[in-house]
Amino acid sequence: MSYETTIGLETHVQLATVSKAFCGDRNEFGAEPNRHISEVSLGYPGTLPFLNERQVEFAVRLGLALGSKINRRSTFDRKNYFYADLPKGYQITQDDRPICVGGALPIRTASQQYAAGAPTVRVQLHHIHMEEDAGKSIHAAGEAFSRVDLNRAGTPLLEVVTEPDLHSAEEVDAFMSGMRQLVRWLEISDGNMEEGSLRCDVNVSVRKQGQAELGTRCEIKNMNSMRFARRAIAYEVDRQIALLEKGESVMQQTRQFDPQSGTTSALREKENAHDYRYFPDPDLPPVVLTDAYVQTLRDTLGILPWEAYTELLALGLDPDDAALIGEEKHHYLSFVRYARASPAVPELAKLWVNRVLPFLQQRELGLEPEQFATLQTLIADGEVSAANAASRLLTDLLENPGDVRQRAVDLGLIQNTDTDFLKHIAREVIGANPDKANAYRKGKKGLIGFFMGEVMKKSGGSAEPKETQALLRGLLEETT
Image (tube, rainbow, N blue to C red; front, top):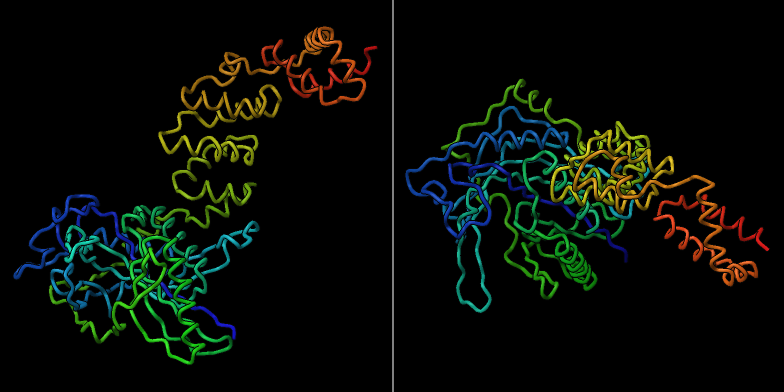
């Protein structure tokens, strides 16, 4: 019996604000435990939360980028549950009226052919809401107790809830990669999964092919690694199918993934909304947005990642180069600036991917677009070989920008095409190696490489390769 997998995601985006969601505590990763806390984030009696305006701005920016409807009036609610790392005993979130509704994220999977244009798979969203994070429980191996770090308590989050629109671990990977790219592009989060800035809860269900009703879902919590997420989904799909094949039922549960064993295990029976006893937060007024405020943020969005990718394809880049250059917004904007001056944009992209992008990981680019254009012209005109331009000239110019042609001269990279000069050297090399010349005439044509190497030595590497090889072949054939 064939089964269909259905997956919905609850993606948590930790926002790059200076302070926490509802108090002035510093929002910073990596501090010693329990340093960025206060009476408000610890939920002391009598303290009151207050809204972080940047969290609202970032939520609207993300919603606009994803094509969501922006609610002009949204409200906060309390989600009640008890756990050691939730000091207040409730989480401030949005339940009844979230800030963004609907929208979609375009994705492309590794196996899809997308050379012809933009990604065609669109994962539909249910909503995006604002909330605060809980703290962190630390379960050290060999210890009979858990430690609690509340630095993260109150960190501003956006939760992006998809429709059950995904059907494989590969699509989940593509969605999370696309979301990571987008939040970095919008500069609202660093999207660092290893630090917990981007993580997801994965809701997995299976059903028999042709069955209209979705299967019972199980939620796998806090996937902060795509490698773990792929393994967890694969195991959970197999587990649910095995239960159904034995005639048993899948129980709705919240589960956790163990990276060591590669298995999921039950944490608790899955709660429903009424278990959390949602009610409006009495201390936070509604968030009311004007049309002018939303339009101002819309005007600042600029080009979006999937639009940039399509534009790079239109410039003649192959899909792999377009994907790499368009991964980060500042890399894309920088490349487009240089492409405007380039005599050959696809060739520029190759140099950019292989030489410039690694350099940009360390520091800023000092070469001007016109200097890059001169470099490409030297290659196109055959004055500098493509290999030397990439390995020696460009490397030197990246470290010490300057006059491109003069630097090529100084490095001895300008190729000599003077026929009389090349013939003179070629005759000297052939005359100095009569045995090898005779062997070449008798059929050992591979010796042309030897003669080329000798000419290059005598010319100091300046002999133009194609013309030199043609001259050598002619002289070797005509010599008796």
